[in-house]
Length: 412
Image (cartoon, rainbow, N blue to C red; front, side, top):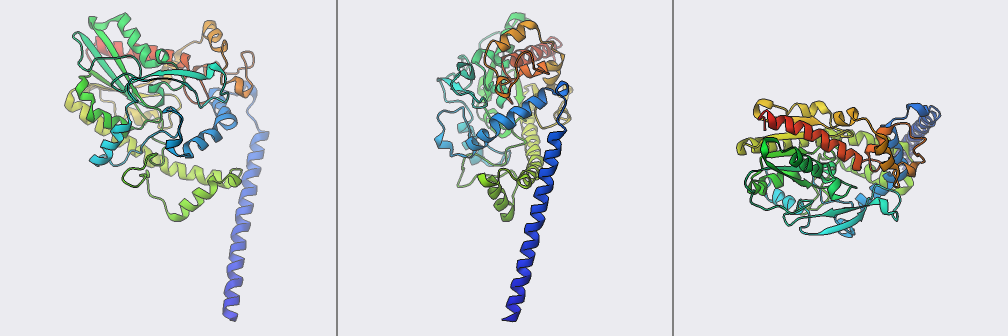
């Protein structure tokens, strides 16, 4: 009996020590957070990145988290989380690739008028956008399966930016490229640019479509626009063969802490935030490697088909530009373009400003207006995260210029 009392005493002291250590750690992190608030960035130094973070913290972060955690069958329509998306693993599993392919195209021949879930206001008409799918499951107008004569066909596969989250069909950068190319008419050809983007799409989803159906459409160029979500996605959002594949295995204790920190009563905890940050960094490394593998397989398949490839990176993508650049091999007709260069070079005009502020904006939701906005580059966005009509127009024009250059020197 005495031995049990001593063991119980030491176990109690050990648990008390752990709780005390965690309490002091929490106090320290909260104090650090308070100090950081006191050292707020001077107003004139606030840039578009700061504004985006502010909007995510104040407006959308909790809503996004709640949407992604609910059951996928509870969605009101296909354009609100959780999306049927998959981590970049299991490339050689034919059954997995087949199931992924089934949910990657858009539901065919439909029209939607939907609210942008990244905007706070749900009733204002300016927060809604139109989406049309064609009979082949791509966004936008109808195309024939067989390529018409004298036509150069570009197929874009990608995630949020390629799809055009928050903007109408005619406002996507893909639609802009098609319109521009048909005005310029390099090589005296007619141009088609197909929108195969999906919100939350990852490389394995694009690869499933590339392998399964894209050869039937006889593309002349593949534009690969992934990397937006690949870094962050921790696990499949759809159960396949009894499980949701995770980007990397985690221990039971890690899983317990993760689930505990998701509980509403712990959302205030900086310790939980720090734990999630560390876990995200480890998952991000695995996610980046999965993205690399999807790219390698896409390029190898395209090489066999003799399709040139352009990899696209956008401002805000967590995976560094240098990682994209590693895949560029002009001698093998593999190119890389970073659209952030086009945004940085563009000079926003008074007309751009007039159009932007003529509607309800995401900046209104965090207390900024035309007279108080410290960085005009924020107007490229349509919400806290994704591009709006102006951003898509500038990106579309930038990519058009680069594609025309490649067409004229016979690189693609």
